[in-house]
Image 1 (cartoon, rainbow, N blue to C red):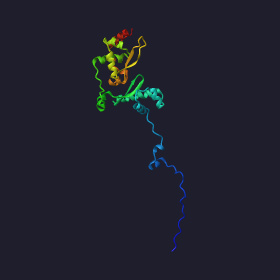
Image 2 (image 1 turned 120 degrees about the vertical axis):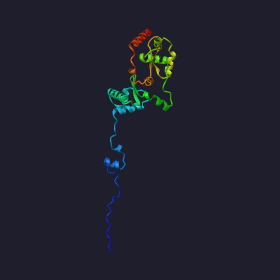
Image 3 (image 1 turned 180 degrees about the horizontal axis):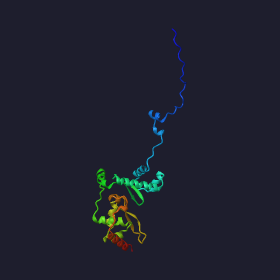
Image 4 (image 1 turned 45 degrees about the vertical axis):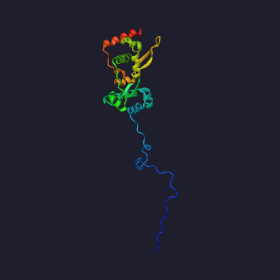
Length: 223
């Protein structure tokens, strides 16, 4: 009995140095990383700005945000206005706060108690009547000096101002260019958050009589 002759060996002596490229769907099926084969996804401008504000450790100027996203400042400002409106209209847990030309994300004042309980902190500062009166004068007339505040209240306010500074509601914002260069005071970002404001323009309007009286007394104090 004669055995058939073996077939010729067609296996190459060496494997090729490179494997042929696979289509994207075949590569994914073979476990290759899709990110190497596809263009990375880009976020909408609003989402990108939200991310930047989330990681910022302090209030930031829109111009700095515009530089980071490589967009015109006007376009960034429009997006920030839209973001602020969305937070407020949907009663989100954060708000976009604006002060002195800078913006930052803050918690919704309505969540203050929950935040306080969660962090075991005393965030709800209890303010007395005199403290509220002093704070109101600073908020409505800032930047303002101690003498100007005392002209309205009619009593010494140095201790009250110092207490408000310690509570983080008032801060020094400059000095008046007059003899002695008295300190000018203004409210802080914490003040806005404490009273549920996103910018100072949201302060309730003073009755006209009170506004006139305040302006008159302040004018006398400046003389």
